[in-house]
Image 1 (cartoon, rainbow, N blue to C red):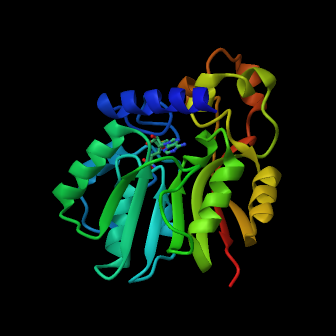
Image 2: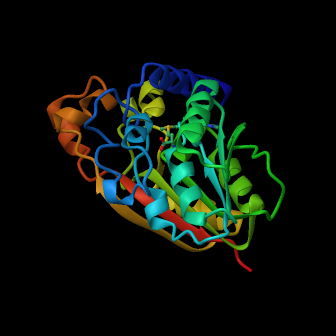
Length: 260
Ligand SMILES: C[S@@+](CC[C@H](N)C(=O)[O-])C[C@H]1O[C@@H](n2cnc3c(N)ncnc32)[C@H](O)[C@@H]1O
């Protein structure tokens, strides 16, 4: 797991340092394209989108309420944290957790520019969340859990920190079919959010084993690897192999509840 984590950390440190935007790729036009509508940016600076590396828009789907405590796993440069902070208002609080110093630095700068007081960025690992039990109303995340080499631990930790009745409301890459071996074993495809993704059934099983109920996985976008803009995410595949991947890899909104 250390190797995977270090590869992932270096990858995202480099991406944010070079301001390469969009999840897992160096093109504007891949998984992250057009996820955020200007109308839903809660008056935040449009430029924040350029520091976003997600594959969904969890705050648009998580039904956040005023006064809630939210935790964003792998908060990156902080766009979802700042959006959530606006949605929960001054009586609420949003934590962003990330392991990459370079990301945390940009996130804190972004917070300062947006003049948002009810957000806090924490350094740490999503497999070992530095928050007490039963303290969070909603766990959000955007294209991060697929990157972990120990997803059981991440989900157990999310369950632990949630209050009873709390919501797991996460955007992630999910597989509809197993990946061909050569992609599944490619560490760069892992750092690119693909090779580490769980099959839909596996995701549900891990959530159930941790204790979550009302589990749902809703596809929000199908990724078409025959398109030029997705090519960088997976290297060395023929057009036929890319075509076979069609409908296998999706962006999804994964949700569940910690029972009362
Ligand atoms: C694909 S980026 C997504 C960032 C952000 N959620 C967004 O939507 O822009 C993945 C982020 O997760 C962080 N990350 C990956 N694995 C992590 C882990 N095991 N613990 C903490 N942070 C992690 C990386 O440092 C990076 O900032």
